[in-house]
Length: 314
Ligand code: F6P
Image (tube, rainbow, N blue to C red; front, side, top):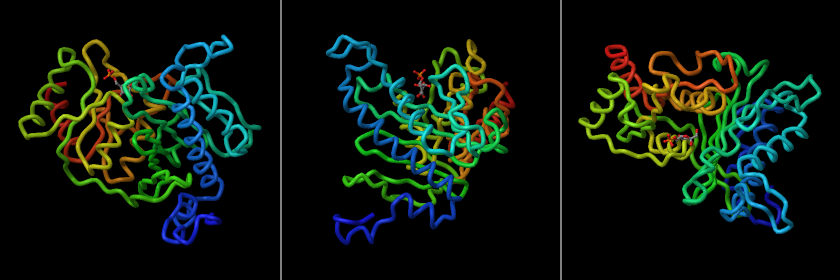
């Protein structure tokens, strides 16, 4: 690092240096680095799509992959050659895919491009990654060793945790991920709420909980993209994101393996909490790749409060 871009590099901490100082194990460090770099390729694909990629034909009349399928292909190919990943599982694949030789240490889950339908509107979207050892079909608490997400917005940012705090990096003009916030720590209580699901489908306990937040003066912040909505809670140091159990879909909408476990890992590392309204997300066992789960994730006060309302009015 540093050649040709002058002295200023001595004032910055890039992702590799940070992970090294943080004592992240060598292979895990390289894997996280590889995924972060892949985020640059995915971002290039988003720009290239120029809003027209999804289901469209290219100039040669060939069908092009939708943006989320392209992101999945990019990630899978990059991880395949990393040499560190045994199995890969993503929202875009029906089954777990063996991409290694069978003796690699890590298992990677991906939501390659969450919220890709928001590209048309030019809202932020993201990539969510979970890194497991042994198996991914397990309780997150036992199997997860790291998680990260990348937000493609006005800036490209990456938040990772390898079990030693949660840290944010910004992709700079030289293509380096530069440390912007170290050891992000949530306040005990925040002032924003982000709610999925239609009000008419809420359960009694959830409705009362939301009324409690509204009476307390919480401000609504919801874009419909899980990554930017969650990122807002983390970067603003508190509040609550929820996609609850609904009358018509008691398991909620969001996927435990691809979306919720990685974010729960990061939020716990930032001093926050993530539950399904009762149990910690990381204590739930993944039985099925498509498993959905209600989610309450954010600072401690709001998540614990949700638990109280749901206990009284299940
Ligand atoms: O899981 C896909 C997703 O788009 C998430 O990114 C987001 O939080 C949620 O669905 C939005 O759902 P809805 O459109 O029901 O608000």
